[in-house]
Length: 199
Image (cartoon, rainbow, N blue to C red):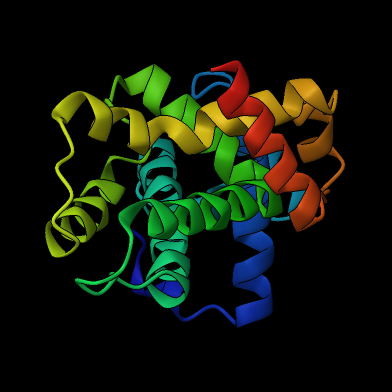
């Protein structure tokens, strides 16, 4: 976990550091990611990284946790647990849309989620979303089998991948260029519909 020195960095410096660190790990495998290259891009001495993190793995795991926390916070604020009289499917459709918008807004996070899941075999990419989905199904009295719950957790990534292919978006080039994926909500809904028709 980061040292106190990292938390005491000025916000602008911390944001720049995190942005460049995410980019480094998003564009390269864990083995291929380079602390030397990252610190060079930040115009900082290589040794200064160790004032903030113990090693490369410490930084990487912090980034994964930080990205998850950012998404969790967005979901908690914009898609609270439904009420008993609410429709689970309507609630989940909103949750899916929020997750997709987040994944497109910060594609470096998305790349990190995907790689972390693949490289470390962590199971469902958004397994931390299990609790809100389980709570929503309990409150609305909606029975969700385990297989469907696993599918729902991974659905944002399946739809995201479908969108990349449909719109011919190169995720690597998008991250490299520091861009977000800008798709209007109405088109995003249309693409979601197209995914479900195809699935």
